[in-house]
Amino acid sequence: MLLAVMLIGIIVIFLVLTMRIRNRIHEAGILLSIGTSVSQITMQFIYEILMVAVLVFLILIETFVIIFTVILASLPVACMKPKDILSKMS
Image (tube, rainbow, N blue to C red):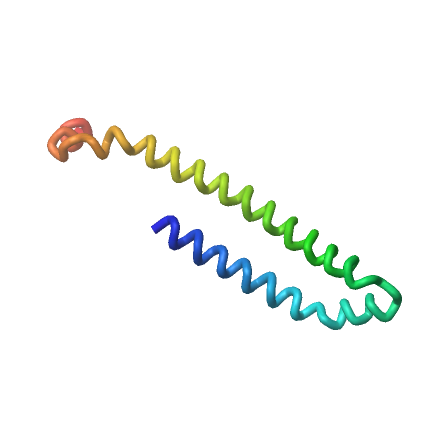
């Protein structure tokens, strides 16, 4: 399940970044017309993608830590029998 969510997230990020670059073709043309090299424009796009990737990676780590701590905290309750859980509630 988690793997499927991660895969869908990667696909969504890829599509968003692709659309973002396609919408900036006009900007790339202007930069080329004022003398900016293709490698500089490419590096600019790569730096922007890396910044987004780092932010997404940090969010992924935080999410993993939260999920792991919730699972770890609920493990003792998950190992108990329903009768024991109900007796501790009252």
